[in-house]
Amino acid sequence: MASRRIKHEALAILAAYPADEADRRLASRWREEELIHPLFSALCNVDELGRFRAIDVFGRVLARLSARDMEAARVVMRRLLWSLNDESGGIGWGAPEAMASAIALSRPLADEYLHMLISYLKEDGEEPCQDGNFLELPFLQRGLLWGIGHVAASLKERLLAMGVAEEMAKYLRSPDQTVVGLALWCLSRLGVATALPIMPVDESAVLRLYENGALHSLSLAELARRVVSTPPLPPATR
Image 1 (spheres, rainbow, N blue to C red):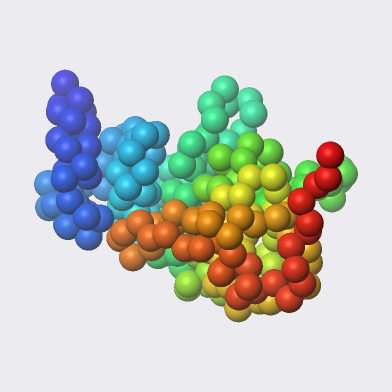
Image 2: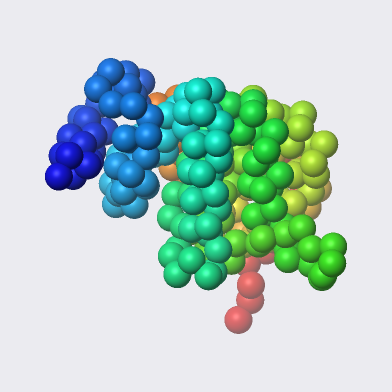
């Protein structure tokens, strides 16, 4: 009964306040362990801003937990990883974003789990050298690419050293324009220009992006002009 009440009240706070204030109010009332279940629920919020607020706060809560009890934080990270496993029976909505949100704020979590986040960019490869856990669903790819771009603000050099920029090539060819836009955003955050061709970009298309506690709209065409040195692929002819 108590856990149900915490969930109800925590979700109400997330819906009512920006991430900074929501996190402050949640931290003043409950311990990190008590907030994990409500935050997992909020990752599936159909409201875009509400979902990203939950992702934002999830990272803050998990980073604090890792500073106090690293093993407890590992349990949560393993739960996020498991949700992306085919054998889990789930979809993993919000899991890449939540992992990235925590990794960006916690160096210990970054040291242990950054390579796992990056593995979701990579093709599966062949045994015994398999190091990829490629996510095929465009919706999950969107979340992963947002996570990579978010982490780039604090771990840019590590991402570059781990070959993340090169992994963007396949996403630039995605038929999903949001995936293309997020790959372009990642390259811009990494400070990388590319000569790789990209799928056609609609001049009027915009990318909805959560940054600094708010949703922003960026022009896909402008992002492409910023980081691509060759024109987009021409539209397919019938």
